[in-house]
Length: 358
Image (cartoon, rainbow, N blue to C red):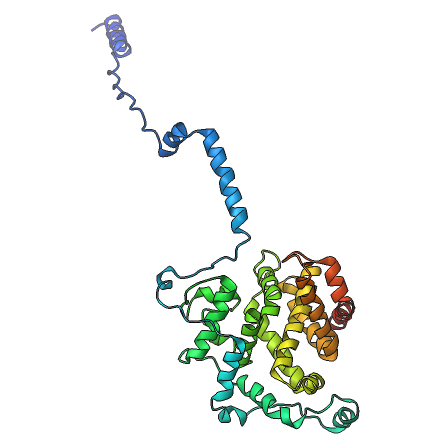
């Protein structure tokens, strides 16, 4: 083959490659319309105006619900099982007076022992001695503080169930173990782990706060602020701390004057416990305190109320009288009332903060 023919042949091959037809394109399946979502279907069928009216009705309903005491974490599987009768404070206290407390009475420390100059100073300038006829009642109080919570004791269960029902509005008993106890301010799922420091006396005084008619408005306000979003605190744990403060004040003899005057120990102890709680509540609400301030406030409450028992009790009575006069607005920080009831307490608190900081 000549050179010319060879070039011609190669050119024809290239033309064949260039002109080679492309394979046919695959046909795409026709688009299938997507099913309408449930949301879009609901939106097409919904009348917008009626939906707006329904939404407004829900808002109004929730506004009404906000004024009702909530039933918190009430276990649904337990609601229909048992419903023990609520117990009063004096009924519960009589239970402990009637049982054998001899084992605990051996281990009580009813008064603080003083030595040296402290003993001499306390003899001449300290509080008066408790009248002999009140010493047995005082000893019973300290013995109750050594009694631990026992779920096998029906009275112990009734006391706790009463506290839970009164605060949460529950109608039926709750289990002895569970997160529902945190609704009333216990730290764990079993209240017995929180009361070891003051025993059943801490539970008894908590009961006194929630079932005593004169204290019910105060207890309601304390519970609401304890469960508020910003100023919340564990109510039961706070109560147990205040029982310890009251018990230490009794041990130091700071309540002897009032006990001698009223001829009673447990009622004075309960009144002082409520006065300390009122002192803390007014400062907590008026000064917008939070759980971060709890340590300082507890220390101040112990110092101020312990050294000013009559003033603390008077402040409590002033605050309770304001409820009776219809001047109290539950849960709102009450500036005027708090200033009137805690003028001296507030200044003492400021000095307390300074002393702790230094």
